[in-house]
Length: 386
Image (tube, rainbow, N blue to C red; front, side):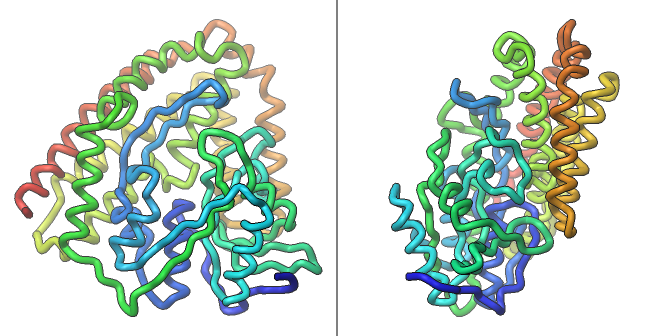
């Protein structure tokens, strides 16, 4: 197929988390009103993973739960059906996309962030599981129309979208994933499916399959963080700190590693669960949210002026991306250049080693204790409901 397919009545932009905001837009386009928090919670909610392999520039500090079936869980528990097609063929993946647009269907896809220019990230910042909606392609103008977390739509070239979807970089290449939804006439979120989502969340955190996931994952994180100068020598260390701050605060988490978002989900499901209040559990997760943000701040602390200024630039860049004003990309590139140009000063600040990492370790262990209490409280509530 070839030509021009732009869904003119698509008018859904912005969001908190790339996956849930993309899925929500498809629900809304199909006249199924649902909050992003509800989709997030139904998908599996919060979690924790410390993930690093040698091919990666920095370890992933992940606060999202739900595992690899996150989007499938969100769709199913909200009453929709979902199939995901994958291929290693760039032509086939592009044909799938054009087919769906030709049927007037905005489409959820995966792409590598490093190949999506509007994100303004560095060329080696590969992450193939970034999720967004494609709602148009104009081959004559060489434009692909995208709705991401920004408040306005953006465009990339056809070559950009093909490259982003074809990326083979670890740990999670996109494989031209194309999402096929089948929607009910009305949402059907039941007490049973909500309990199922909470059980998944609790079980993953309290009974993780491997040590770097869940409550035990916090302990691994705490053990490794003070070894980071050895594991990531020289300039690699500040890249780890830089990325770590983003994973917690600005990388589509809504801040504090998704914890405030999850608290809003807990408040929203109280009527579905037919209980008066989850206030005790919510209070504990609000407390853990503060710990998460304190850890992020300790990564780029005030007593190191260049690291502090880098922290502010990250926050500013995220705000600019979300607002998507006309000069957004120019401003984001400028901020990224300022960060890159700070390397020499950062190296000077860290030449005697990052003396703040023991504080980070202490705060991680405090976070572990708070989250253990929070998930135990949630587990008790689930037991009472069954």
